[in-house]
Image (cartoon, each protein chain N blue to C red):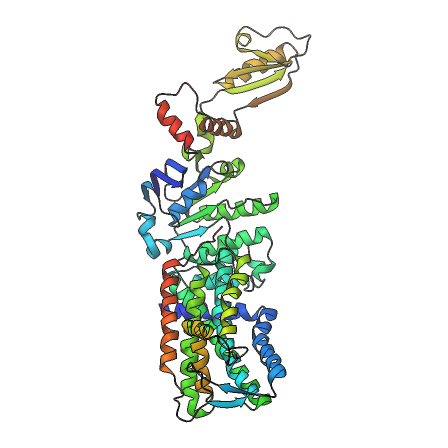
Length: 316
Length: 264
């Protein structure tokens, strides 16, 4: 699945301003972004619900705007909010949607996959929010799709229901399905996705594995600790890089193994207890907030085309 | 599955869901009977003229049997026009239609299955109304007029279903559905003699207005097939043609303007 320069406007509002990304077969790909970033618009173009104003899109080798039933036979869609007939049971609902597909999965198998085995004879109207969402996924799976779209699969869930939904999504990945999910939860993208694209203001501002987003993999590791007042000064090898903030000493390094070895070796040798010792790397959250902040507020130094930039902002 | 199988599949599941909501099912069937009983209690001791567009009184029949025929027509309009317009609007606003649209299920088999179900409900309602009329008011449909009666029902049911689908395009949201649908159909029912026959001195423009819409034509075709009158055919092709023209117009509008996604 591939999007190149995807653009879409609703009246004067530019929802997408050139979205590019590629989803490879068999991977779980997350479109991550704040509300209003254009995630749903992007997914609905890929699903064939919306037309695009510009750009190229390929889904399973087909153009979704013209793919029609041939494409819909091969994909499963979980929309943000869609209704189901409340008076049918869970198993009946699956049997109902099954009829549309050429090679459907057996109902029992799908019930098992979605963790709905115990609820097969429960009426849809009596399901909880989390159970309904699992049924949404089950309905999308019943046609045995190659590719699955999940638009905000866990928004509004309690923590337990979220874990349950994550388990289901992981088991899909285990079946070798390609999954495109949108989310505004970082931990969800981190927990589920092989690769992530961060969408902000209608553009992809970063794409890659969650641990490498925004140069996170290359970023310096931070070691923090508190030195007791009576401790001797740090050795020269460590001291020049040290910054003290609020009684804490903070060291940055590209080589945390060596730094920690040197630091703890020195501390043991001098009988110094390193209080509140902590080793951390910039969290995905830090990177994400920085990325989306930059997108909303382009740095003034990057004003190669001020007229165009202004035009873009007026369009918002 | 082939298209026809999918239509039957949709019919089966629509039907199953329909009967699982006993309150809705009960009142769908009780509503026209209630009207039949009320109107008969109000006016039942008198007689009523059967008259067609030319306004002449062709035959006086007992008011109670007149109401069996007109409430049978009303049942068809309720089951097809009103119920289809409302239930399809609700399905659209709750996102059921959007979900169906995301599957390989063809849109036409979905709608055809629902329409087929509405027609079946209409047929059952008419059967109940006629049986009720036969049991309590001495109203009968003779075997001789049955083919005309059945054809009239079919054309009426199909046309009002198509018009119901077309009307969904004009309904902005689920909350507005009952108001919009009733505002369209109730005045037509009143000016088309379904509930209360227009008085002799009613203004001519009112009758002319009613004749422009399909309800009046459906009622006349139903009356003709219900009360065989000497010198008058039991089948009224003219009325059925007007009715079918409205139905085709409705189908064209529905195809052109139907929306599968909520209008929010």
